[in-house]
Image 1 (cartoon, rainbow, N blue to C red):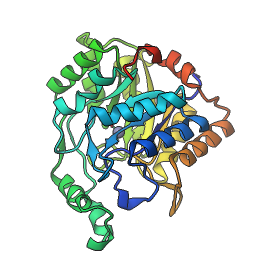
Image 2: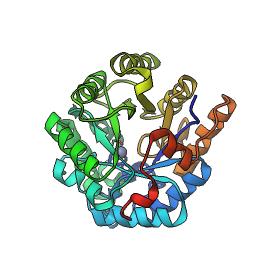
Image 3: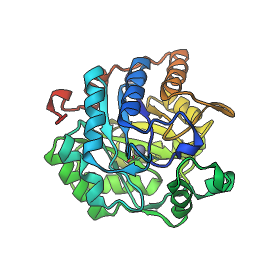
Image 4: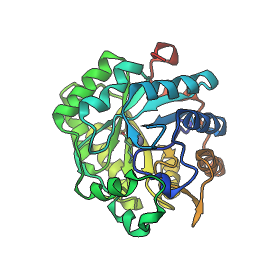
Length: 311
Ligand code: KMH
Ligand code: ZN
């Protein structure tokens, strides 16, 4: 088995500031969390930008650049920005970060899906929200279609190829594996590919073990096990740790972080992203799986190297 690549997803765009006071929002907070996660064993940091004043998800390349520069000054970790988005972001907005930063890795979402957090509004009263935008944002996801058409994906691939950025393929359901295999067969993306099974999102496949195994078996059948590396996300608690443990056992890689799960134990908020990384490191060590350093992860994934980025 490869050494284990741990990705830390620090803030995302679906966790609300109201859900946890520990969610990093400003570039400084995000960078500080990234450094702590790298020290704890994360090889890759998945980053979303937020408006530093309001905590709202943002596609502003200047904010991404500020975060990336702060992180690079203090650690050797891989910087992987999102190209995902919310209802008010176009595909053109979402991909802007790639030519601006020329990162080693960036996400590439492999199909259009419903992607919703609307049930969360049942948990809070109007006065509970930290920011004005949060309730309307969460409620509006009931009608959100996360758009990733074949045309969008082709455009993302082209931009990533021009900038030597490797796509991290986010696959939220079995159909997304077929989409990826379509692009491989067409020669638009070369193997070995790097993908992530994103499970437990309302609108995508569940985090139950059978579904994760089915994703793996389908990817093996469509691509051939030697032609891809994968990581697993389980959204929520305890799904994050169950899904990651299964992946550790199967030879896959893992992602943790407040983007996907805010709890360290049942009902106990994680006080930082690093606490989540530390927990998955403990699980991996108990299971005898060694942890990859950022440079070992670069080698496993075939990345261009951090000297070739634009930040
Ligand atoms: N928000 C996650 C469920 C992306 O940012 O492009 C999936 C994700 C994808 O992290
Ligand atoms: Zn993300």
